Image 1: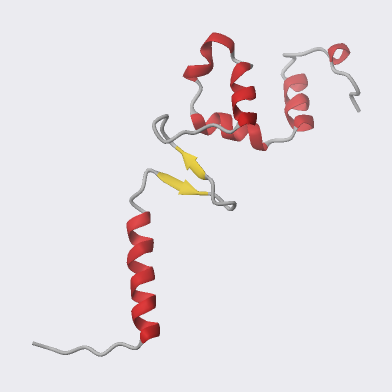
Image 2: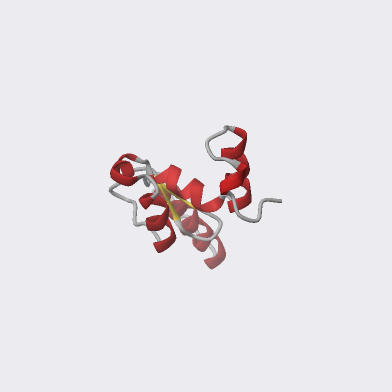
Length: 99
């Protein structure tokens, strides 16, 4: 049997490495702000803003994947409006304050 001697720093690094590897098996990823990027509806806990976004889809709001709702929350209002205009899904006359 071999005896291995570790310093406190080495032990701490080893523990951190094991913890990091165990987190990689989780069904979600942590974003830069620490919020879980839910991949499944079971992990998904919407923020109040995400609840508002889901209401845009009416009766189909439960069919929208969580990652799509998170994406829509993150893009800016101007960007979304411009993309809808580019696709001719909304008219320029209906947009207030269009630059």
